[in-house]
Length: 561
Ligand code: GLC
Image 1 (tube, rainbow, N blue to C red):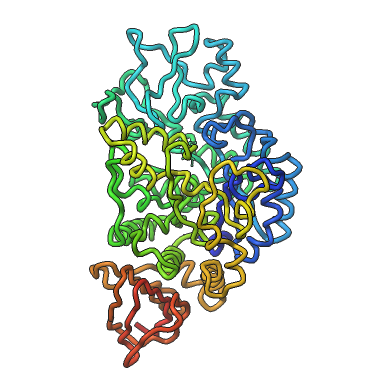
Image 2: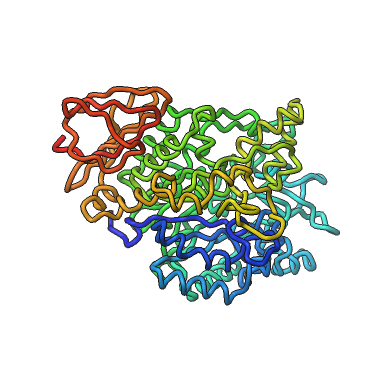
């Protein structure tokens, strides 16, 4: 594998709407990010992905872009963006924008022109299709519920939207559309971006012609998940290879793909040397236990399953490319509330999860607030939830026969709004996020969990993340942590997640006791040094017999093993 400048970095995701509001309108903004660059520098991160802040009606929180060349006034101005890129650069921090090009907003000029002239050139920027006997062209269900097809007013045509009806899919088969996208990407790269996080990209290639691909319904609504068609959609590589050659190569861009449902045999094409992208997120644990029926029917993940997901991905990718590891993002519940059984949640348990995730081979990502151990929000009513996807899943749960309380409890666990609650800066009003009314409720635990308190406390989650980042960059260990191979240790031991990282200079051993009881292990060699510990000490007898407390995690430097 070719070494790249970004391999030894640490990346951070900002969800601008919930980061810091400097205007008092209840919505975070770019000046809020600017004001916190020093906070991020102190944490130690190097790359920031900013979720969409382009002009948007915010039907899907900015993932519905109505003008790719403008910043939404609620988030600030283009000058703010330019200043942010420049000020970040002064601190050796690279900025990634979110590239949302599977779809745009129905309020985008292209779509408006398409509606005005449904047989004209702009209709070809989208999928405008004739129905069959007065019905939509096929039975695909959108990610956010209902048919992917929406009537084009005044015609017998329908337009396709894999997500919300305000997010019409762009027609990647049309070279004119692709040209517009590449131009726009270059325009942004010329502003000094390091690259992009690439949204929902697997969806740009459809199984065509649409009418040939009706699938057996997977729910009572007679529809089949739009993802079903992805296995019949052949040839996405032509588009992605073109994008790489036309844009990424030109700028030596760093890119991270949001890629679900990739065919295993295509992994190397995606992130191998000269893959379409630099890296892609590992979502194996995030999708574990999912049900075609909906969130209400999904299985909650166990520590044992979490371990198995991580190791499966690691083994699969070790010789293919460099993964991006996450605990959570803006589409997932808070990792500490998901991967740690709720009755066992504690600071050591949160640190254990952090240590494990950071020590996997790959690029570690922190989603805003993860460094504080921010938790899921206990929702008391569906009215508190803003997210389109959670609202749909709530209806699905209700239709299956669940009571209101049961449906709320089922969707609360997975709701995307868990991660979108305002960042908890301090213990003042609205956690210091806004002087106005926050767009989403602040988690009431902000008096206990906030940045100000944690930055002063050397035992805090924040300090632990700092230590993990410092270890990754430590000149003696960086090569092993960044490039060393991963080899599970005592893989079959229930609720123990343990692995070696073997590099040229040394062998490290990560031990994580994923349960509320202590356990004693005999190591095959003496411990040379404890590099990081989420407990004040480690019980070692005769150099090799180690007793881990509940949720204790240690990173050990081992003598020759
Ligand atoms: C991606 C985004 C998600 C959005 C969807 C549609 O999955 O991360 O937030 O809803 O794409 O753009």
